[in-house]
Image 1: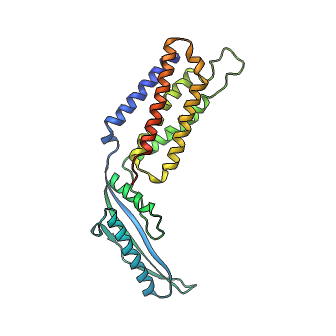
Image 2: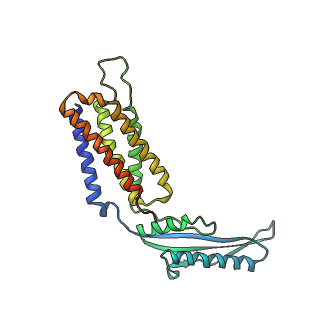
Image 3: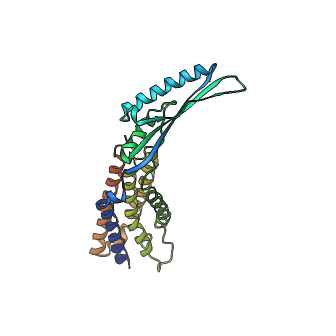
Length: 257
């Protein structure tokens, strides 16, 4: 059953990747209708005028920063300034929201990344809502489920000679084969998501499961030596793993800003 299961799952992987590549425009739409919010404020000022003046200075700096990163002042809407007085320490604070209309997901995702990379305590902006958020959530759930099952493929055979060699049960071979497609899908989804804040998590997850697949191939290397067809299949898995690592590196190298 192993070669049949492996070939069937490999075909599914190939079909999945072909669909993601050739139908990416419809799978990962870029047009959005969203609002990026930047909340600014001044605190602990002795007078209301002082709180307003500090807020104005922060607002001007924020607008200049936005303009330098591709969003002109005309593209920023401002809410009225709100001034509050703290009854305990008798100080004043002023707050205001700046709103940017986002109509193109990649452009404004990179814009948000650029602004938030500044690590300015006074200036930040929300990340746009991805138009393919359901795909992201679904892909992540499938990824985690397959990841849990995939670790079982690193089983040990124990003393029962009637059992399949470690990692070579048809179910495990099928899961590991599909894992190639799942890991590649996560890389492609991440490349379109442009989530600067999850780069570290993505890199760790991709590395863990590429290593898991490599360990599985190492543990099962002798089981693939029983025939020419099996050996060719093993070489295909090794080449596919190298391609998988390349896809992950490509996704991680996509410009986030």
